[in-house]
Length: 244
Image: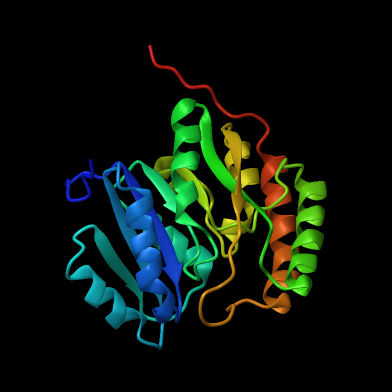
């Protein structure tokens, strides 16, 4: 039975988008189908879109009380959009996925099952198989993931997959910076939480083109990597707190 209109959802799905109007309707319907057994909400974060994204979300919201739109007046990037969505979410568990349709919402229940099975798990990360990106983009990701894994030893082969489930309070306790979404496993582990993984099948983008290129990832990513390495080195021990 679906309980989507309940005032307190158990799961929030956060979807950051910029100029993805044509991809919204099919993805919203897929999310609803995947979570038909859950109390859920879907929070789209419109990151300064200049196309019909806002109008399309308004149209869909008219018949879907569980669908919300939060807007950035100007584009602030994916990490900022994810954080805005998580902050706006009302559920204790948050799922994220990219707005281009490449992440299949059908995998969300498997990630939820993992995080609910163990109270020590703070994050369940999707790991893409059979990727549908171009050969050059896959090559970029392999190099970036290899460098990150070597430096941070975060045990994750693919941090670029947008499909994740985490505890809202765990995410909001993390230090925020632009690029945060690419380092979630390392930072969640730094705070003493366990990470779990689920293989997910990648899909081709339905419409439009990617908003991110090699220069967006390379130089800024190297600086972020150095910063995250420093943060991990400076956290010597996670406090185990009790009262009385």
